[in-house]
Image 1 (cartoon, one colour):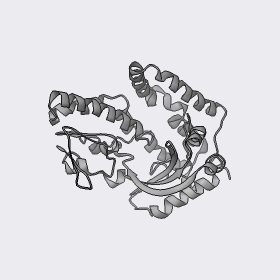
Image 2 (cartoon, helix red, strand yellow):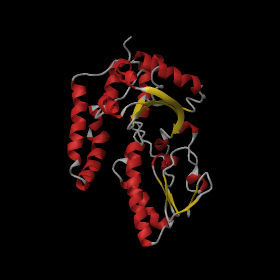
Image 3 (cartoon, one colour):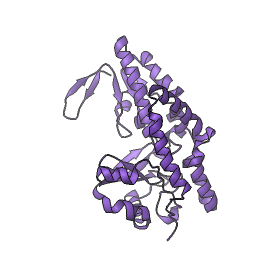
Image 4 (tube, one colour):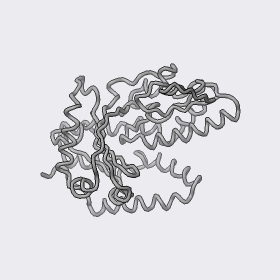
Length: 313
């Protein structure tokens, strides 16, 4: 790699190229470093882009963690294990609710152009949280499609693919770092980007951008307490087993153990989070106060049972 050529033909030279182009980007494949993701590991994602004033985003979503689950027949979230629960991604002056489903589900190709909009309409029509707190402050601006390698890390062949080459480092979804544990590749994108930036600086200073020198990026990523743990965690995938029994008590227990307080058990996410947190505190001790506020508000919501039962009519 010696740089990139943009869509307009501009040529930008670089000693090290950091590929953060996401799932659809073919750069690492064209460079001969990686292969395509299998269809069984790719999710088609529909995103509804809503404008929302920054102060409203902060007031409605600030310092909170939200997740929405339901059984498939309720028509609210994609079938567990075969697609994402519904997420709401927040930005400075907009929000992006999104819902996904595998391109191939149990050997079939579902009609996602009809399926996902219907799910979202059911969600917004039944969820009191959406109708009272969000909809009055949000205005639909666009509907978009995207893809993500939702369970790529569970496929050994994909997990073994390299994410560096001569003059090139690959981060985030482009490297298959979507977190199978909880369907959120954002932290892994941050972590891998931070590691890639450090290695790129070292390579430029040493005047060596060879694959052998850049291999230190791959070693550091694989040694990171969070990245590899989350892409190979099978708990969310195993939640498919709940579909057969339809046991609501077991369903709630597993959801809370997975995304709620139980997620912080050392064997689940507690260990990796603790190790990553200690490293962050060492770099910037003041971040502890910000974390305290976030979890104070989150656990207050939990203790007061401030949850909207999706199964209620």
